[in-house]
Structures are given as structure tokens and as C-alpha cells.
Length: 170
Image (cartoon, rainbow, N blue to C red; front, side):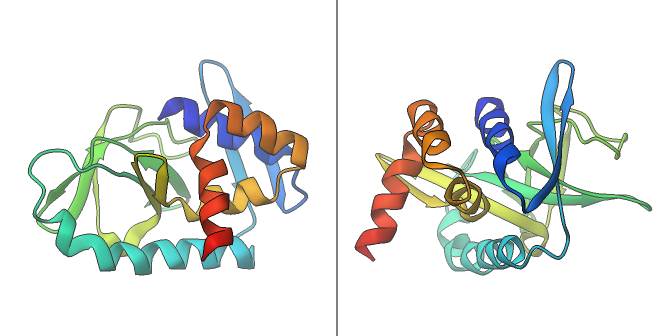
């Protein structure tokens, strides 16, 4: 999952929609986005809507769920989106370890167990064979990449190339 986070963030650099990429020694880079990014907000809304559709199926799975969740965590001053893997449903919330260190919210670090309500997620994805489900913010980021960047991205994480093909079929 850390590899995916690094790749997605690395390829955001060419998009004028994103304000800044902040590199960090020994940790995933941070992508700063405008809160007014209409497309990104729509992608996050779609993730929250679609997770509600699959929640009944997920609630029957024992142990870690076959998905990763991107969650919006907050403190008094900041809001950050981080990935959670090895997700379990606990009392209706997604619970699992953080995949990346938040920049400003110092009470959390990689590996810390957090729990978020479904309405607090900003994305999710699951991989089944060559199919990817969810990944709305990642798909948007990939769509904003140049053709050359997409080719490089797809070499490392080919599921998104297949996802693009799936979108054409629909």
C-alpha cells in the first residue's frame, strides 16, 4: 500500500489542480489539494455513496476486509486524508493501521490503529483479479496525468489501466 501511496502522490506533480507536493525524508510525500477542487470532492462523495452499497456484504466478512480505505482524519486545526489497510469492521466503523504518517496531525503515525465511520472516508478500493472497484480519487488523479505519466504509473500498478478499460465498457 505504501508503494501505491508513493506512486499516486508522485504523479500528481504535473497537475495544475494540485497546489503542492511536499516530499518527506523516509516517508510518503504529501499531496496538498484545494478544498474547492470540485472533481476531487465529487470523487470523494462517490466513494462515500458506494461504500454504503457494499457495507452489507463487507459486514459478513470475518477478519481483515479485502479493501483499503482512505480516511479524513482531523484535529482542532487540521484535516488530512490517509490510507488505512488491513481494514476490519468494528461496531460499524472501519478500523485498521495507518499506511502513511500524517503531516500535521501528530497524534497518529504509520501503523497506529484508527477507526473511522463510513461517512468519514474519502476513498476506498478493492482488487479482484484484474478488476479494481472504487479508487475514485486515484482514478481521477490518474486521469489528470499526462499520457507518459500514465504509462509509467501503469507499469507499477496495472490495475488502473484495467480500470480505465472498464470505464470505457460501461
